[in-house]
Structures are given as structure tokens and as C-alpha cells.
Length: 266
Ligand code: SF4
Image 1 (cartoon, rainbow, N blue to C red):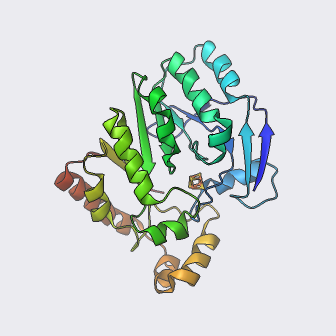
Image 2: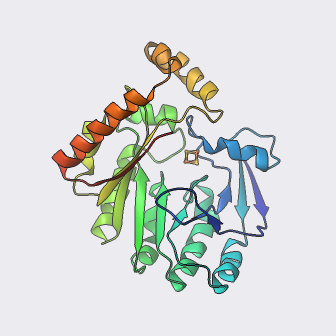
């Protein structure tokens, strides 16, 4: 793993995601190296020759740049921390870039949403609690430790993510479970809704995106570990398939009384 220290020129970027006005990515690249990661398209803008997951650039001056940007009084809006990286990947333990960014966002009272696959997020409960508008989400694609290890080899295991959600929720922070990407035949939606009860205020969900250079990695994993699913995934999943999933999600949301805030389809 190659870790570089870089100076960024800008940090706050306008978001095209429906739930956020801005995005902040404290790092370039992501150690978590999820097999299905579609942020890997970012690699071509970085000049890196290493594989996605094998480099991380640390934006060492991120909080100073953000301070400058916010002092210019931009329109207030929701900031998503971590749209093409994980703000709580292992480098954060040492560099604390995300923590410094949160301190600035808190000073300017910007509504903030954090999404991660790491239980390191609980380190920052003291800050998250002080926001007037803040939410923290943990991605749960599966509860099966082996499937998680196969698809998300370097993230916190599902049980640790659930524990983090519980700790955040018990601390009075608004929490959400991000069920995404939904892995056909592998993501058990019923069991995820069951365990999210009492830990989250809402769920957000996302279909599997296989259009961003991640298919080769998915295919190779399926060949090795899930050959019975290879033909199914090769045939891809059409709109009708995802419409069925959406109906199922709505049903589960009603049964478990956990609001469904969004289902992003690619
Ligand atoms: S945690 Fe997110 S950004 Fe990082 S590799 Fe996984 S999917 Fe990609």
C-alpha cells in the first residue's frame, strides 16, 4: 500500500447525489478495495499506476482549505463525507483528516452526513453529537462474514459495523443503514432489516452498478467463490429485476417500520 501526502487546492465539491448538496473526500483512493467499488473510475484522474485499493493520497491540508472555502460563505447545504473514498479508512487513524474536517464543518454549522464501512467512526462521536444537523451511516451489504470478506476484504466486518451503528444511535446521533450495493442472491434484505431495528432512523439502498470498470473484478470473484452465480450476473439485471427489489424494500420498510429514504438505481 502506497500512502502519499498531498496538498489539495479545493475540497468542497458540488454533489450530483440526490441526498447531498456537497461532497468532501478527505483521501484520494481507498484502502478498503471493495470488489464492486465503482469509485475506481477516479483512478484515471490521479496519475497513479497502482491498482485501485493499492494507493491512498492524504489531503494533508484539507481542513485549512475547507476553512477558506466556508469563510467565503457558500450556500448552506448538506455535506456528504466520503462519496468516492471512505473517510474512515485506516489512514484516518493516523492522519485524522476527517476529524479535522468535521471540526470545521461544526464551526460553520453545516449539515453533515457521514457514510462509512468502518467502525472507526465512533471515535468522532464527541464531534458528531455537537452538530445541529448530522447523520452517520454504515454500509451493510450482507451479514455473512465470509461474503463480506470476499467483497469488502479490508472493511470492518458486518458485526462491528452493526455495533458501531448501535453505539452512534445510543449516543443520540441520527443513524442510517446503507444497504448497497445490493448483491443479487447474496444480500439477504430481510435479515438486514431485522438487525437494523433499533439501531437506525432510516435506510438508504442502492442497486449493484456493473458499468464502471468493476465487472472484471466481480466476475473473477464469482468464478472463484460463487460459480453458481456467474451466469446470473453475466446476464445482468434489468429494470424489472430492480423494480421487484424496490417493491420488496418498500414492503420490508413497512413491516419493520424503518423508513426507506432512497433506492438509487444505476
Ligand atoms: S469503501 Fe467505498 S470507496 Fe472504498 S473501496 Fe469500498 S466502495 Fe470503494
